[in-house]
Length: 246
Image 1 (tube, one colour):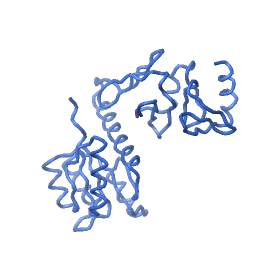
Image 2 (tube, one colour):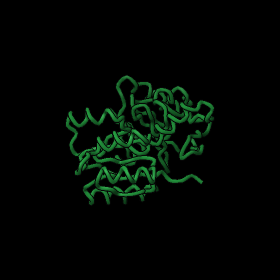
Image 3 (cartoon, one colour):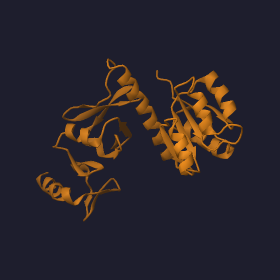
Image 4 (cartoon, helix red, strand yellow):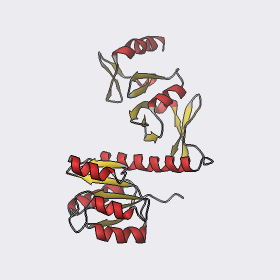
């Protein structure tokens, strides 16, 4: 059985830290601690070795979040996600030297936190695969009626008829199905080349949709499951032609 990802919260505003902890626990993560100071965080990291550190840039105390990260990285290669209410250029330039996996600006929503952690987990998995080429690749297996995607170290089946749409997220893409969401470590362009044309069409640089799931077609967008999805002018005619042939 896979162990939940262990996450350390280093945040000196305890109300914010407690709220983050509740959100992470509800998402199934293991919070190893809530620590307000960088010095204490370094001791905790040495003892617990979490998988990810959520680290406030502007920690009060002898060392701030960036200095904490710099000291930690001399001994440990642990992904950092910075929390910040102050994203000025000087802090950002300093923070970049520690190669963080993400920045989350306060105040943030639960979904922002979830996506930053999921992207970090997938990037770590991808880096491990690159380090060990013999390890099983995480590319999806695409069959005529379903797709198998890597999710929490397992290959999970998604029936094509249940896929609503797919959205690009930089070098990743997210599959929205009737029941769940799945994050893939591949670009939307690469996935578009693999998907069966019979069922899917790209309607925008950031969206691929399942033709059978379209509920409404408007002038500049379509609706799938109450989600308004933009349609680019260049792809609108092809979309209408495809809908006429269904």
